[in-house]
Structure formats: structure tokens, C-alpha cells
Image (tube, rainbow, N blue to C red; front, side):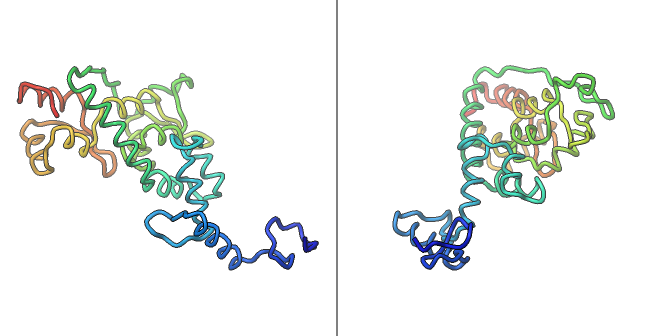
Length: 240
């Protein structure tokens, strides 16, 4: 209407490029008009649209973009930044992932199935001759996100265990190794929730029972069949 002499997409009422202040005011006015409020009461600013896009569209939410795709869309300098904001601190991921895993765990606890764990040999690369069983780091992070592992601690652990290797475009992981972590292990919080134990009691019980766990960074992982089996033998019933 103002015949703007610019190819800028958003312009002000006088036809000039819309400035940062005008953009903030427009977004705030529209949000107030239709009743949109940001998460945790934070102020309405256009930058929140970036967080909404990343939080809602990263797998397995929304349209399901991978961690790498979200990083590229938002032009982050590192995948660690993307992981920290949209996986580790994503409230939807934490809530949905925890609820799904606990439903699955409680459904399986009555008749636990013991799945053999792959032999882990330090310094050996058991998967490198067969690219079909390798997955890239982004996929490994996606599969293990419910466990709350950071990409760095997962990488260090997998490399030491001989279940990952460095490649030209990043790291590749044994799919069987990654899936075994997710399918056959509890986090400490999940185990305590299933057994209805406070932290101090759980710590004492695992110490008394000499239950071995895997420490990956700051996360302790316990074998599901061991935890459920020991508890059933002690109580003579099903946890929960």
C-alpha cells in the first residue's frame, strides 16, 4: 500500500523496513490479542518463536526433525548447544519420555525378559566391518535421550567400550549397543520410582545386594532384569 522501495518481507506502515522494536511490539500485540503466553511467564518477544519451533518440532514431537536438522535450521554453532536447549532442557521431552518409559517398565516388570547384553571389549571395534549396524551420533543421541545422557559422556563411554568410531563427518555408534542401553537399563530415578524407594534406601539396598551399575557421565544405569529379579526374590512379588 505504501509502495515500499525495498525487498524486505516485513515493513512498517510507512513502507520502511520493520525495525526490531516495531517487530517486538507487533508480536506482543498479536499474542495478547489471541491469548498466547510464553513458557514459565517469560516476556513475549520474537526470539521465543525460535524456541517454540525447536521445542515442538524436534523428534519425537511435532514434525519430528532430527537433532542435526534442528541445529541446521536454527544455525547453532555446535550440536551441543542444540542438545542442551532442545533435548536436555526440553520440558516436553522430559515429561513425555519419562511417562512412556515408566509405562513400559511397569508393564514388563511382572514377567521380565532377560535380553543378553553384547560383550563389550575395550579397544575392539566389533561393528566397524559392517556399516549396516552403525548409526550416526545424532541418531544415537535421539535414541538415548530418555536416559538423560549428554552427547559427550555417551561418546566417551562408547569409544572406551569399543562401540563407536571416529569418521570423517563425526562419530558412528553400534546400533545394538545403543538400543541395549535404552531397552535393558533403568536410570536411578526410574528404578527408585518402580520400587517405591527413597534415594537413601535405594542406595543402601543396591550396596547390600552388590548390584553393579554402569556410570555414563553423571547418569547411573542399572540392568532391568537384575533390579527386578533381586527385588522379586526379596519380596516374593512384583514391584509397584
